[in-house]
Length: 389
Image (cartoon, rainbow, N blue to C red; front, side, top):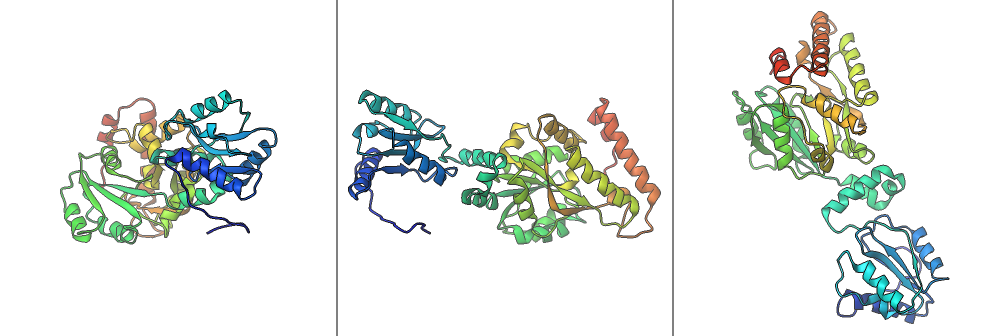
């Protein structure tokens, strides 16, 4: 797609990038223009205002240059061909800008400078651009920003252990997304037919099955190490995802480094509804999402933060505390994930639920977290934490 009324195309010519750039400026000026500005195509932050400013700079300078943060430049403009600007011995290195400036200064050429931007040469540069997007709404709204946000790769990582009753339903939800996401199931040594059921549902598909030691932190880390997504999404096996969950994740991650889903339970019991409110408030206001809310995070950040602690329990709580201590506020999706209420003894949507058990369980979970904050070891807490799978 092209823009503008007047478009002239001509082939690059010359041996080497320096000669091709010099000839491009020369060919443009030969068309009768009084100024020519040459730009790169890998600068997502470059806008019309920067280019206009470059032309204005040429009113008072012989040459204008737009530096890149890696020591090169993304823009060079001039009113007449200046061969000294293209005398660099080796392009693509961190000394291109300094060599170019030195050569022109030696020739007495007056140089002006445009704003400094980042270019995109390697995958790590895209990760840096995502970080800039989250800080700058202007970049986020750009064509490149929207494209990168909408096409971020998602790795869905699911730790399982004796989940034969839930794995089929979860895989039914994920199968429509298997070409859009990387899906990794990490089994922690199930003694039931979890793995057999999984293999029967996904033969020959892109869904991967890994094995590791038991423990959600251990299993999720193992999946993360084998993943290749830009965004890592850690999902509990007993969850029900909202329609279009990938869009929800990408939309949230366009603004935040990490986030979670709002949670709800498959119950109309008033105390479970209260639990839902408390859980969502804790994640949003106190910046402490739990694993059953489907935590997702920028890949680079996850590894920078040391991954999940590989402890028997409280791995999600400790990870969220660590993120909070580092000033990382999570975003929250609009649509909610439905989390099983099996830990509370809930089955179905009955209004006549075991309220006493719900309150007892909620108090017990609060007590375990309080004990953990006071220094009780995860190993000791694990003995008190019932594995309901």
